[in-house]
Length: 445
Image (cartoon, rainbow, N blue to C red; front, side):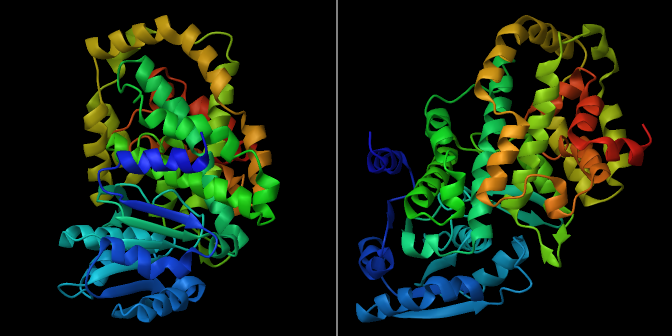
């Protein structure tokens, strides 16, 4: 099956995405694509960088076809932060009867998506970089009062991606997209664990949309770093299909696991490196390697020591105390507690889960070894693609990474390897294995 066939089937299955147009010179088709799905004037929403990449061409195409448009361009420096407040400010710009058109990459798409959704109107997205998987996803990962969460929203009705523009994006942005896509490797392992324990079944539609092509999309890091259009087209296709898989499943489970939980924590901390806010994809890349190092450590054990009696000591009250200690008082701790309550079990239910884990672990661990990449293999691919592969690349030292791993499991109700390790009493050891000797010195263990 060709790439076009795979994408066409996914779009046909979508409840919201009507067309995805990917190709060289596709910007020239802006007006034709717009006219197939929208009527009335367009509002072109971008930051300075996104506008420079595709705004004038899109505007000229619309004007040339007699479609009224106006632009609203925000500053690109400092790098816009994906927040509900920014989305609300863009919503205030829109007037009745206008169709918003997002021109840019991750942040701009997410805030326009949220603005359009809260107004109950569709929007169009013109992508300018293969930098993340959210163009076609039914969610906007935004910070709200300091807590980053994925807010359910309708994806763009139309996605247009000109490969000439995508390939000309700054190489670091393409690296971010590679890092975001790399996160689907440990996310797949996390879903396998949740499925095996009877917590969240694997979706036979969404799973193959992500996992069947994943190795191929990640197989050409050198060509991606070199700006090869065919390799970048494969990367962009993979990111687009991941977004459609999330929409099909109704959540971000097909694309997001422990790697994203770690990354979201750094984004909530407003992590900066070299005087610039660290991007989502860069955070995910480092979170991916850290998660795979924990998997490497876990799967290297001769046996998984599981003590059902441990269930008696795993209480919600104990977790709430730990959350307050790790996060301090305030809104973030309150939301972390709310998320943790949704997935917490204790007593007989926990004992039953640990018993089931003991039963399924031999087969599950073998399947995980077959599916997952080692951390070293993933780090080498990320390096070659131009993405960060270690905490040093984004300003995260071993101690900070260690503490981040301990905190990350509380940010989402989603069950991941972090929860399995915690319930087996192994999380601290795995976190140290992922964080290195510096973490041991810093935390005094």
